[in-house]
Length: 101
View 1: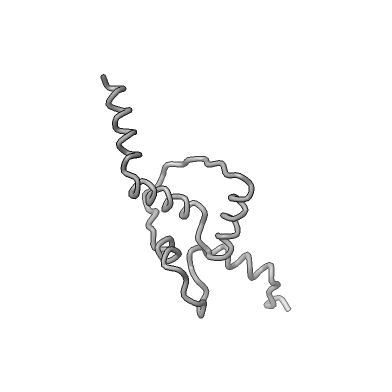
View 2: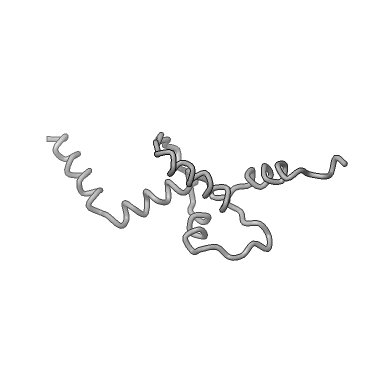
C-alpha cells in the first residue's frame, strides 16, 4: 500500500521536475519549447516583481500546465522585449551618458 501514490503526491512529483514534458505528452507550442530551451545558467541577479492578482494566477497556472518555471518565463519575456524594442536600451544608454557628464 505504501507504493500507491495519491493524486496529490503525483502532482507534487511532477511540479518538482520543472521544464520537462511528461512522456507521451502531445507536442507543445513553439514558444513553450523556446522557454524550455532558454538557458538560465549564470543568471544571478534577483529582481522582485509585482503582478496584479489575475496575472499572478495565470503565471501560476502556466507553470502547472507546462512545467515551465515562472522565473524562466519572466527572464525570457524581458529578453525578447528588449530585443524587439531596442529603443529601450537606447533610452538607458542616453541616461547613463548624461550621468557621466
